[in-house]
Image 1 (cartoon, rainbow over the protein chains, first blue to last red):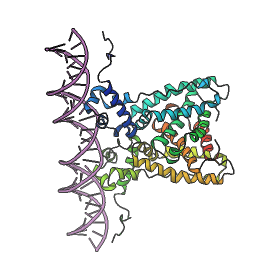
Image 2 (cartoon, each protein chain N blue to C red):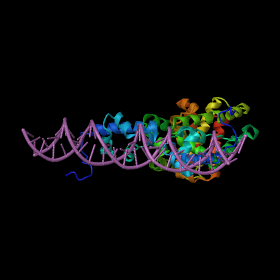
Image 3 (cartoon, each protein chain N blue to C red):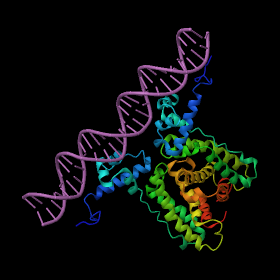
Length: 197
Length: 197
DNA sequence: CGGGTATGTCAACGCTCGTTGGCATACGCT
DNA sequence: AGCGTATGCCAACGAGCGTTGACATACCCG
């Protein structure tokens, strides 16, 4: 009966669609939205540029599909409250290095309004609730600033780390070891989430 | 004889040159490097696009001229050591809001390699020495991390703040008041500069 | 006052981009 | 086996871009 919009059946072109998406993420991550061209993405995926249009409609829609992202945040209330900072920083480093989608989103979000909106949504919908749950479970100290504001502060430090380390490649930050980064940045995140000023 | 390359004399076209530079900074700050077009900049400056080329040679050179930036960092060793964080965060907020050059540089640096290099230079040449002087003057606690690494950590938080507040406009960070920002972020910067992990 | 130079306009170039439509081929179902 | 359809390639379009050169006007100095 195939009622839904896509037949939901395995299509023969699924491999091509996946190749396009993979190449798109790479290019968007490396070059940003405007410098990543449909033509270059198509060449990486070893198909014709017109295929990209057929399967994704437009460059903007291709980006929307390539920028789907789940932070996969762990449940921070199920661990010792004094470790949430370290766990979170470590988790973000893993997430950033294991998937270039986030770098693509960051690079594109700086110049493309739609990508910026997507970025706002990710942090509001995924980091916001985690911060709220943590604040609700915190014994004390959690006064003076809303959970949303705390999530924003965390975002400022985490995105600043990603920006300087993976995008601008500021030498000291780009070369610092994972352990050093966690050692120094975890207390900041910890304080933003559940501490006081 | 006019030996030197530029005659160094006040030229009649100085107003035009300045208008171009001002329009360029606005466009680069608002749109990033690739979306800011020479044509749009020329229109803002109310002159012909070819004038931009005549006076600045190319788009890349125009950007180089527009992205000249001095952080104007104060002498942090001449104040109570426990206030350097607050002073620095306040100074950066002022510097960011009073001059869009830094936003232009940040937006462009994410996609343009030359702009990224410029950004690296600014933080290495201007923030690095300040951090080094501060660390040298600090009585204790300043062990375990080089001054350059400390400057990098500061840059990660400061640039993250600028990114989320002025570029991505993440709601919680963009709407937070100046006082709240200083209250919460100053301790972070303070610790990165002269504290321990 | 007259000539050389600086300032500005106009039109066009070559290029790349996203996007489109037509056409060949290969697949899958009955 | 044969037909409908999905998949893929090719060529081209219109637009926008940075950039260039020829030409007109205004200024300044002798």
